[in-house]
Image 1: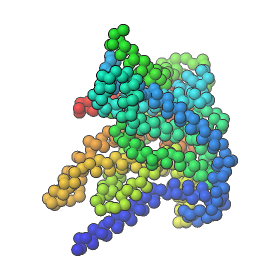
Image 2: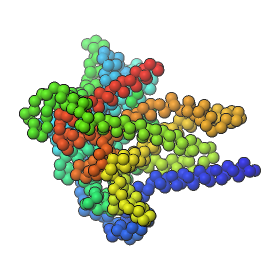
Image 3: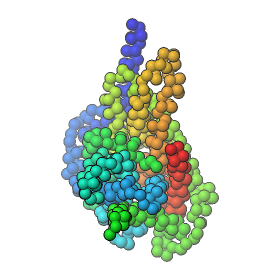
Image 4: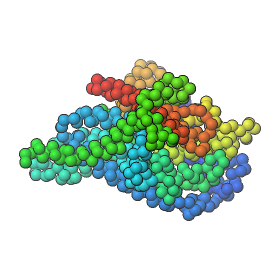
Length: 280
Length: 297
């Protein structure tokens, strides 16, 4: 009896603890959410609450109609779509070869790729800038797409190759007996089976492009060419300038698509990062 | 045409786009960075730079006030502090989440995932303005309420380091909790039951059952996290080092240091030398890890 009672008290404590922890964790997001719905002047008063005082959609209106956010959104979606398609188109055939075929130099290349993966893309940014400038690719979408696909190329190749390795050869051999060509085998048999890893790879590339701000701000000039990340960066409220409520509204607007994608595809996010991570 | 040859041709053709892309956008820029590191390229010598050998490397490694060594030290310290805190906190929280009668587990897990799901740079900027900002940041609002002086949280080295650590933990913990939680769920309950019968307390059970059971599972994820923590750039850069909005803290990580030298003070040669040094360092570590993996198999 008393043991049961003790257990119940313990559980209550645990639940209170977790509720408090979740609330504390969400404070930065909740605060931004509340600020994004409150009028400009309510900020100056120092008594703060998580429920916005003069509730208003004004900030969201300003974000959506007053800023270039729709243009940035369009740029980002276009950039992300092309980058994801290109990354997969380039990575999948190569991953298939590295998984199925045995050729000279295969092991060496794979080892080099693992080592290359430890190189932070940021460090060669200046070199890339200097290489792309004479070719006229700085300040163009094509340049950014090249940079992004290049940065994610090693990861995409590894991630898909790792998954192909787990698909048994026998399934393919049966199809080959029936006279299917390489292309048919990949399109009809391997790809449908490898769907989880394809989705994971695509998601990772998509989220990378969506969240990348440093190349986007360094390589692109002119607000009409910005991506969402670069645009938000330019909107941010510093100590001196900028409007914190508008920035908060913009932050929430930009995050919502990512949050939706994340929670819809949570299964793939976790499995992709644990199983598909770069392992030898 | 014989079959072998045809197969080899398709292999070449199918791998070519990927290999060309990686060579052009990854390998070649690294080699070019190495070349720049041997020159005195900067704003004044954009076209007429000359090769000066290993001088940049000498400056980075042997001039103590150059800033590279202190940035390296800070980065190592950062990695150790963050990893220790992350592992300990994630372990405790995952253990608590696995207490059997906790009904709302799923709700807590979903809520705790939010920092991971948010776009990283957005969260960092929200922390910067919402929490640390000296006028309308929450911390200073609370300080005022308590009748304290407001503080410029990000402007001194130590407090910037601590603030960055808090933000980094906030961003990184969800992933670690998920990994540990997943690993703990794979442990067979019967081990605990027999341990309880033998009268083992929580510490004994943790040491004898939980830790040995989860460490092989979380191993790779932990190693990857060590690398990402070492390479973490966004937190420090966005909070304290943004061009035009520096907060005055001298806390640099090697990556922000390399970035500053390339894009703010425009010492391209020197910055490239630092980049190559960081790359070598990372190579040594990942090669060692790779060897271990290979030997363990």
